[in-house]
Image (cartoon, rainbow, N blue to C red; front, side, top):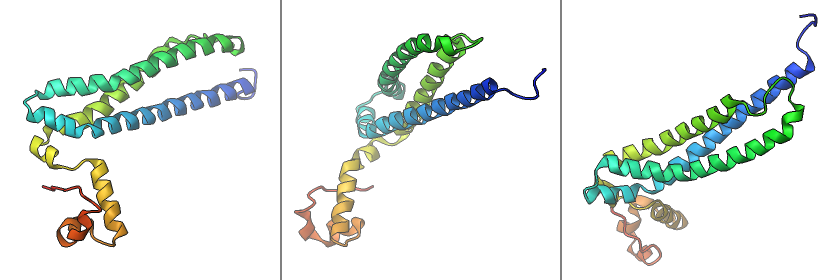
Length: 178
């Protein structure tokens, strides 16, 4: 109260706190992107499982469980490294514990929740789609190859197979759009 305003320690603490928040936000975005992409790549598999009679809750449990394994491994490794780093920076912290329970519990819980939502939403959407439509849909790699061949030959991708049979040799993938 005797000082006129925040000191350099206060400003440094605020800036480092903001960097921490931005770091957690970027980690959350990264976890979301990777987990959601991995689940999206498995839509055909989910369609096969649903077509063979699997219950949607069992498929959800399987997909979410498999999506959380790498997240759990990353969290375990990250927490181990954070504990080691906390010991190294303990001398620089004044009035703070290097083993802050809010940080060491809050960040893993937040990243786990992000991974749960990121895997649960696409998996839930995939279990609600008609399995036959999912099985008819070409894989992403086939759709992209189809578009590349169409672009190389100045042809509309939708008309490639019907109006240009000579390109079937170049693009032997048959597409069955619903």
